[in-house]
Amino acid sequence: MHSNNRVLVVDDDDSILSTYQQVLSPETIDSGVSQALAATLSESVKSSADQETAQYRLQYANSGEQAIQKVEESLRSGTPFAVVLMDIRMPPGMNGLEAADRIRRMDSQIYIVFVSAYSDYSAEEMHQKIDKNMMLIHKPFSDDVLVQTVRMLCTNWGREHYLMQAYSQLQTFSDTMVQQATRDGLTGLYNRHFLNESLENEVMRARREQLPMGLLMVDIDRFKWYNDHYGHLQGDRSLHAVAQLLCTVAKRPADLVARFGGEEFCLVLPNTDLEGVKTVAANICAELALLKIDFPESDVSSWVTVSIGGVSCTPQREDTSNLLLSIADRLLYDVKNKGRNGFLVEVCSDVPASESIFLDKTSIYY
Image (tube, rainbow, N blue to C red; front, side, top):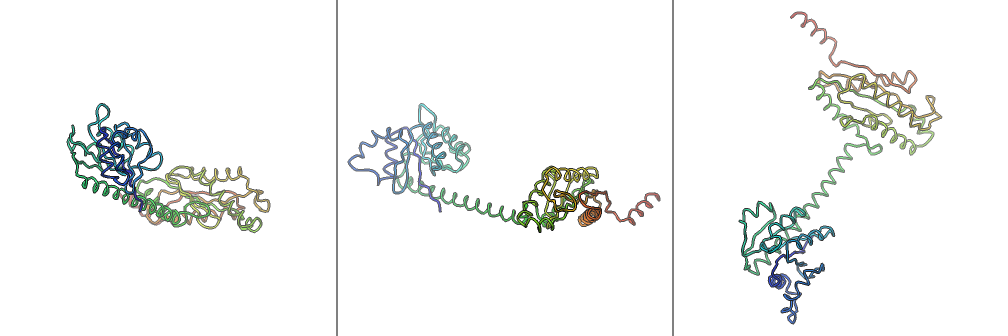
């Protein structure tokens, strides 16, 4: 567990700072120089060096401005303080509550302990200002109370940061698992599982809002030939290139591009009518022609090409997903049968003909 024994002591009285030193770090005080500590403490405050101790690493400041500066330096260096022991009245400059408020804005995790005999603020006012991780100790303080308080807060800081790090690691692990569960490892596109769920959700949304939606099935022409001639590594690079191109064409935030399987891709296009589906399909073919991925062995073109089947529908039923996939797939193979390197799109209704006739008759009856 990560521990932090760094403590910042803030008081405008050097003798009080000396008392903190004697209570919290007696191991560092030589009996022959203890009397001179208060006289030389002002110089210690100006120094950025830590007071190395067996239990705590103390730094000192005799004003709110110096305290803010030291906290800034500690955060910049990646060595934050766990606790600030802060006097409230430090004339003529910034008072302790103002300094603590500035420190809290920089470091939301630091513990702030006000140690003062007098205060112009109530405990409630201080709690409202500092919000959290705040305590109040009255002067003169008990040595044992001070030591136990600092020890407890340093321990709490370590536990909290350990939990924060553990949570961050778990979140990273969770994000990685979600990525692996929903993304295709080769192309980075969404996978078939995610596509199925998203398509069903989009059908329900389009049905609820009575808006059209489009779906495209895209298949790379003669891809087996390409793999056989250039090898699977080059085939993987071409798959990735086509995947990125599809994402570039279907660039609206709501558009979804997924790897359907092998060299086949699927695009879900919310709020897209037949003309929109046709435009996206045409743009895919045009952009791929500009990309010019060499494939002279193909009987279709000198470059890699695709065949596309597309459909637009305003869903009336909840079970329309499979119908859209089936129609787009049929149109895709119609393109292949016609020579590949092109697209066919159509608009469809998911209401069976018998139901349509019945509704018409009912309408006529009324």
